[in-house]
Amino acid sequence: MVSDAVIPLIPSLITQFAKTVTNKPSRSLQNAYYDTPNRELRALDIGYRTRCADNKCEQTIKLAGEVVGGLHQRPEFNLPIESNRPDLMAFDPSIWPHGMQANVIAENIHPIFSTNFIRRTWLIETQNGAKIEVVLDKGEIAAAGKVEVISELEIELVEGSRNELFALADKLVSQNCIRLGLYSKAARGYRLADDTPLQPSKSIGFVKLKGQVTQEQALIEAMGFGIRFVQKHEQCYFNKPSLKTLKRVTDGISLIRHNFWLFDDIVSKESTEHLRNELKWLLSELAWVENAIQLKTYTSKRHAFYKKINNAPALTQVINDLKELQPSIDDIYALFHSARYNRLILSLTTWLIDKQWRKFWDQKQLQNADQSVASIANRLFDKDWRNLHKLLPKEQTLTANDYLNIRTQLENSLLSGNCLGALFDKEERLEFRLPWLDISHGMYELSTLDYLKQLCGGQEDEKLAKIQTWLAQKTEYLVSAMEQSRLASFDIKPYWL
Image (tube, rainbow, N blue to C red; front, side, top):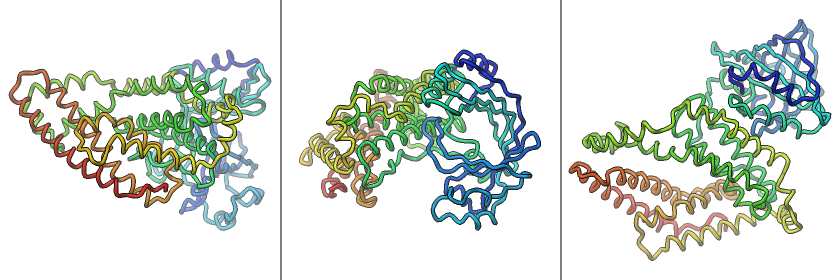
């Protein structure tokens, strides 16, 4: 995804990278995307379009593939057509997914949206002999009377090593106005046509895993899930900036970091040191987000805190001063466009696609990689569960500080469930996790109250003193509710046993 500021630099960036560059004439491309009213092709993750340029038309099928960190890998089939009218039945029937009724779909397809853009193309050859097509597309997606801008650079491997594609991508994202795009023109077009804008997730959810996956397969799924989750919410922020969306970005980063620990049977620290340092940097850049959400909560007219705070001008002033210090929306845009951020996403993608952890394997790690991840999940969950019960013993009455001190451990334990919990029964998993999720939410509320107490502290003010008394009462009620959840958790059988 390219900003206008960087477009004039693209030819020189390509020339610096390539051994030879062949410029092709710019072309105006008119594209129509087709599907049935029930979106049967979309349900199969199939893209079907016609494209006309220079008085010639072709039709294209893109089948389900994989998208990670901006790298799109999909089987593609192209056929010439006489006009812009599609002919689905002209494709070789062997390409269709099992059970797809191409003839029925062909009778019901109609245009859903269009993409019209000017394409500038360079064909380059690298020093190592790879051939890469670089295209710059500028135009718009149109559907149902609405339009969305297209401004993107696409680099496609024609011949040679995929490493050359990553090397060129690294050269490009070293500029501060380019970021990696998770969503294709087709995906964006469907959202526009169906009026289903990209929405932030309410929670991080669960990595999709099947019972027979190996530990290495689970690592690949969990890392891909985490990278996509971060990029999804990066795009959500560009669509509609919000603090809660940024919190989802930090959730995704935390999940990626957690995977390095979770799969340490096969992922050595040496293979991830640079990535872990960069993830730590990114979390530090967004460390202010939770406090910013808390400050926003305090000043919301719908919140119970609002009246109390509004009656204490000294506290209102402190909160307003802190809000003034927060990074702006433009600051966050700059972060997501920065070379360091995009190089991190690209490095994670390269690490995952090239399976770079294998470079550090010995015989034991090779064996561990092929083990069923379900047995490993049992062992890890058991260890986490025993550890939590040691930290939160049944016979002991806990204080607010006791809970705040183990917040990180509980969140990590819940993240393990996000990564591997899909291997187990959904209902049993939900029943077991519910009290712990209540406790986790309670810990967040406790940290909110604790932060507000700190803001009230150190000032001689009668109204602030009253607020501190009120906060102490709120903390007491909250801990009492958390204690009930904790005690209830001891009676629920662990879902992995």
